[in-house]
Image 1 (cartoon, rainbow, N blue to C red):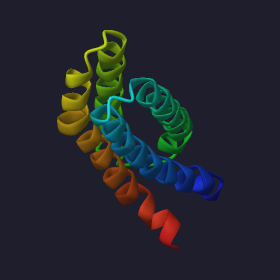
Image 2 (image 1 turned 180 degrees about the vertical axis):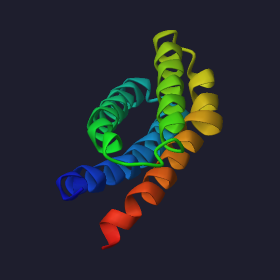
Image 3 (image 1 turned 45 degrees about the vertical axis):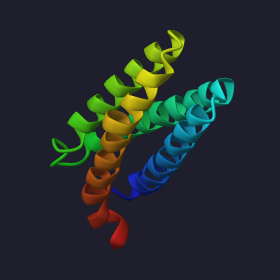
Amino acid sequence: MEKHLDVMKQSLQLSETMLEGLTHVQRQLNEKKYPDALQLMDDVVGGFASIENSVGPVFADLIDTELVEPHIGKVRESLERVVTSLEDHSYGTVQEILQFTLIPNVKKLKVEMERLFEPYLVS
């Protein structure tokens, strides 16, 4: 399991960075800075893709991942909805998805990853 410790730490850090980025996207949308929000959202999507790709091998070596994996799917679905809404310039819809779906799902994913990784990171 030691070989996965860096991935675990980086995934948790990246999930925190995603939350900060999403909060900033909300602020940019409120200020009608749409190009800035779009660029930052692109970075958030890239961060999530990194988490999704890197935790697969970790999960293969762990048990009890069934509480984390559904949250990965929910975050992916929410991100897809945000991207589609951004492409349609439906900024109000983006704000709703961020507030009521995406940010809560990223928070849940982070909490579940912390729970899953904690026994390995604390030791």
